[in-house]
Image 1: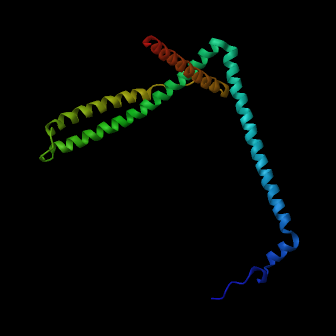
Image 2 (image 1 turned 180 degrees about the vertical axis):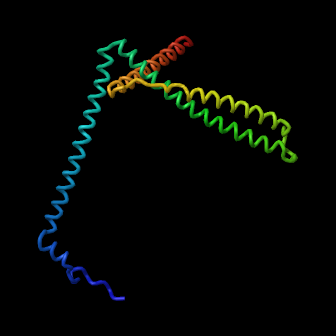
Image 3 (image 1 turned 60 degrees about the vertical axis):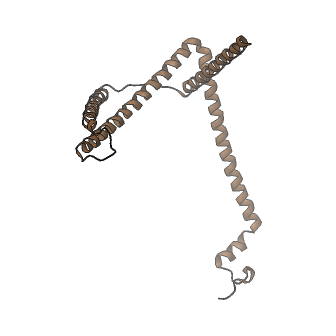
Length: 195
């Protein structure tokens, strides 16, 4: 193997020769830093605008609650309750599907094991057939219930603007603070009573 040729003695490629003749390294670096700076500034400006917009939306949510008083607070609470109820109903329907599948699997396994030869140490095998029957019956009832739910009209939810979402969050935070304050007062009261 030949030792590598030092870069200063290496023959210049046409590309290296052309680049070195047209743009000095300091100018290339300055151009690169300028481009980097412009990209960073554009990113910062974009992030700054997004934060400003977000803060304004949050302020709008607070103003909505302040200006509307109890009526607005109740309407926001109704929207939140609606969103929660529909989300929970969808979750439960999904879980019912999982429960049905689990019951059917257990039923099949219990039936298969109930007719298999006995094994020392396996207890209550004589109950497997009855358990399989009850699991199958429950799975059937749950399928019927799920079929009724899936056949019913889908639940709708009210539209919620960005300001209303912030008002919901503000109410939740405010409610959490009120609960924490009440619990603190209870604790202080209990300590005072014990003293």
